[in-house]
Image (cartoon, rainbow, N blue to C red; front, side):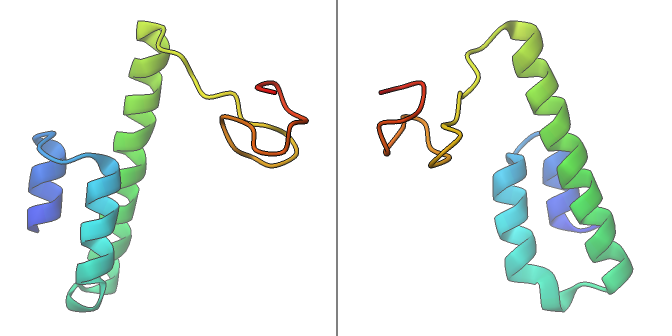
Length: 79
């Protein structure tokens, strides 16, 4: 197991940090393990999003025109 996998499983790093670390180590890993790490990162992110929904945390309401929260184009929900 690589350090990204270990830290991700122990929740020592966020999925975003794991993705950054993976991009730095991409050429040093075997292709199979690279895909395995990507899958673990996606699972961790999905788990975090689900937990946030259960806790009732505010989710971002992105503007349908510009895709930002808060809206930058003055057409979205956060005028």
